[in-house]
Image 1 (tube, chains in turn brown, yellow):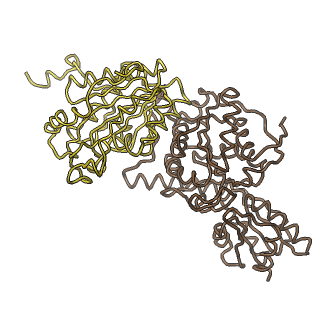
Image 2: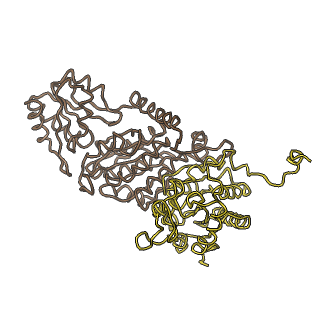
Image 3: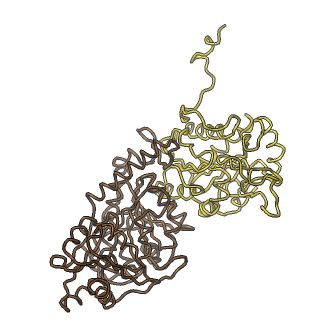
Length: 359
Length: 257
């Protein structure tokens, strides 16, 4: 039995964290995601489920609190927006290196620098190409609705614990701030400490009762050991590509042209596809739901069918590079995007498709 | 009598705590870290809390503390140990959580994490080893480097006008309401080590009583970084470090001394 509610994306995400049995949230306010911590502080999940919520003194402290909780096997989440995520990258790299499960949410705003508080997708590179230092990747989920803001929280925890790796939910100011109806799942019980120790006692630092001690570190002073650690990470990423790739195809079966877009851009592009179809242009939409892993094979195959591809993004051309790599020059690939917090209209997207691809 | 006649279990009067591993210490001969490690582990052993203790190792000379301390440990990013310990303690309030940090980690890059964990009164122990220099990276100036003291980044001596004064972070912390116990100790002689151990014991007992932050500073040497023999370093420490970083309790049972 679920519950239907009208909620902001940020609030739906926060409520989903409580309901999926998260153990802790550590965060720091920044627009446009502050509702996450505000909602959690108001809801007092400590009373509802025993979930710990704490406002840290900085994004740095928050992500390192996440690191601490994650090192003990707890289901822990943080959220921030672009400049805050830049600060968190230190900790995210440590989480990846130390192989710790955690969920990080980026409700993206325009940049670089302090940028703007309006929606943007300009953190694509930062999210899928590493961001922090060292050889690592993040599993990246890109919600395009308030429903997905809610659903992806539990999915993200599942992936994080499946691989013992940090997972990023890459949203933006539009999805975070807009209100939609959302089906909230039933409350799940938090895992008991006994169950946690039973499940994660082989690695988590919960106190060495009845076993040899555990150590959480990302340090390997011997190069051979460090290389082996990185190889271990790479194996996880290969497995993610095989087992946990997610994408959605909309009207691709008979498509002669293709739009590739994720998150809020995908929502707007879906309308552009409708407009095109009304004009008799057969356009399909491929929406990557995971940005890493990226639907490379699907794009490679679609490139045999379509005459051209438009990558629609709220940035100056980031995902388009992955689209080009995927189709290996089989068909023309162009980019269309607005930036600085400006959101493209469906009409603009259709016009760009006609000018850049159909010609 | 042959020496091997003496080395027998029945003649043993002192042994290494089993909470120190057999891994050879990576510290320079004469360094105080080994003693500080040992005292901490002895206290945890004697209190019988090893199975419920989680340590947080810093970045710096004691980055590998987890190689030597035979308990569950998490290695934190530079300066972030108090944030890491905060979350562990919040998620596992019945556990004994401590950080072990040096002066660069705790008093420079991690100042914010230190001050705020202390201000929130997290129920943890912070062991702060202050040797007035960055040992790990080869002897650069630390926030606690004394005036006029030479290091590789203050080769003509620390100049107050351009580099600021050596930071008494322990006194700063003692003034925060969330802080219950603050003391400054040393470990270079048996007498000092015994007192330091008592202080560490008191700190861990405060966790059991849920009293908030207990902060134990250990003023220590760095003979390699100071470019001295171990003995000279200890003498120099007594003559120069102790007058500025005065030993003794600073705050006991939540009250400033």
